[in-house]
Length: 168
Picture (cartoon, rainbow, N blue to C red):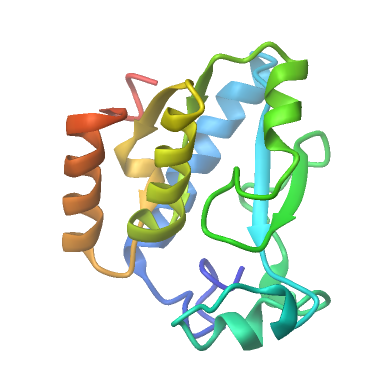
């Protein structure tokens, strides 16, 4: 919620809010078709566990037990595979690769916030691990629309199929 709820300093982006609403639509369809869904948050037990983030609120709103670490209720579902990461990529230091292998998954659909940070890092890692990467443009959000557009244009040239929500 630290990135999606306006009660938090990082959660005041209308662009991110729209992306969460679009992601909720996508997840509804995915779950109905029994597509495995992985949801993560970012946070830690304290400063010693985190890499050096240049975003101050990470050290305040993303600590275990803080409401900012809760998964936004628009996308949370008890049947999803959920975990916490400490770095931008959903792959870095997480159990995701084992989950994907266990389910024989070869294609990832990446959504989230922030496009220029966590989303891009996850796209790069998914591509580097050999997965096909699909990114529904309207299911990703950023604090600045220009950063969102520039990063998706760049990964779309190299690593991912950037498509519409309806195409996915």
